[in-house]
Image 1 (cartoon, rainbow, N blue to C red):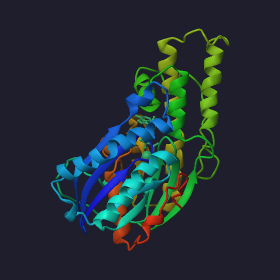
Image 2: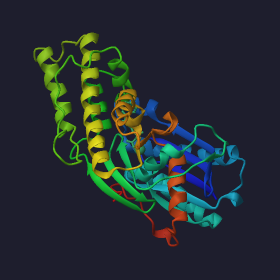
Image 3: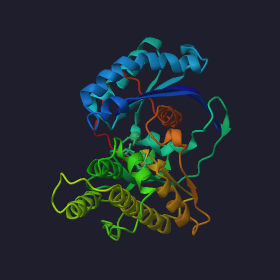
Length: 352
Ligand code: KG4
Ligand code: ZN
């Protein structure tokens, strides 16, 4: 089965063509047009600007993936598109494009929850055009960590999930982005904070780990972010115009990163003890973080029966191959969408 995937939930215009069979998977083509350079100057994503860029890039990128995949529209069995969650005006561009294509090409259209794409991103092979075997053992746990979400999910089948916990305020990626801003680092903040942290001492500042021992699987990152702000105010003696030194920036970045990661690792370890899953996957933009990967690997060394997976680095951030894959699984699971003409975006779509 050949699936065309489309993703425009935030500031990446993405399209992909993948082939999914019973036990094998091939990414035939996957392209992501990032708008980071456009939004960098504003220090964050400006929704209307993002939508305009999506409109500009959408059809050329679809045309290009079909060409790169060496397929024609007749080869495509299903079109999968992100319906939500995300920015309404960004989502609209992808969804309306997909609806128009499905309508004129007479193909089934599968609306996909963006987070479900992240859940399956660990299956995507690094190489384009190479067929790989895959198998999935259910149930597995998925820790989804991105700019908008921090969720721990038990995946029982492609159609069945249980939300174990989520953030009650900021997402972990959002905390990285906000702390980066406080430290005068570039946008997006995650990579900038982790780069600075490489040079810093993660024990330099004593930062809280909110809700680490709350006994449930919920998260909270607002308090940690505020604690960084207070520490920085203390260091500058309340004078915000006084620049902090590189040493302070690096040490604060390292201390923050360690605190943020400690919470994630602790909650996942607790969930492993309770649910004994065969596999844990960590996905979403923040799963590119190397401290998170290393600490998670170290913690899971105590559980040799639990496999730990991460997506390839190119699939940690938003992409359309993961949307095509999740859409393909839904389609195979019997999900049909016949009246898609009425379909609209769902900016607050929940996974469960
Ligand atoms: O999944 P994603 O690309 O988009 C959303 O769906 O939100 O995630 C983006 C988030 C941003 O907050 C970004 O700062 C964070 O992922 N991020 C990182 C790293 N790379 C990206 N956070 C920590 N360390 C990284 N290396
Ligand atoms: Zn995402």
